[in-house]
Image 1 (cartoon, rainbow, N blue to C red):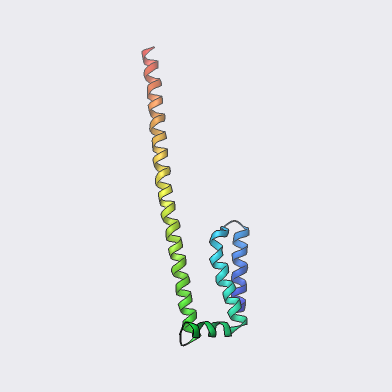
Image 2 (cartoon, rainbow, N blue to C red):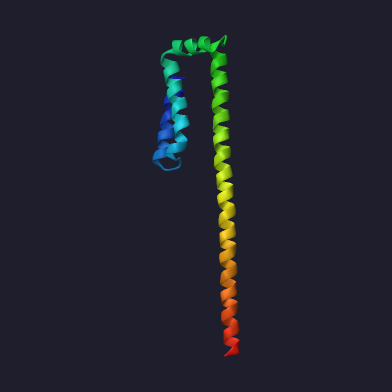
Length: 116
């Protein structure tokens, strides 16, 4: 688990450095990999947290935390997708208006040429 967590953290840093992933989106991934490293080195943390949450086994705790993390990521991506969808709609409307105005100007110029 240690190797997987370290490799995963290195992968996150690498994608941020190559500007394929924004820093604000990488924060959750870094927290997850950091948590994996802590639990790998000190498994008593997971056992203590499981007993604190009244979960019988640490594997159930890890499964639960994984599910919560996936739900958080999905919710975050849904918010981002909604914002992007609205932005695309606004851009399409703006471009359509600009195209219409450009066509109107060209038509007006053509009409003026015909009258001259």
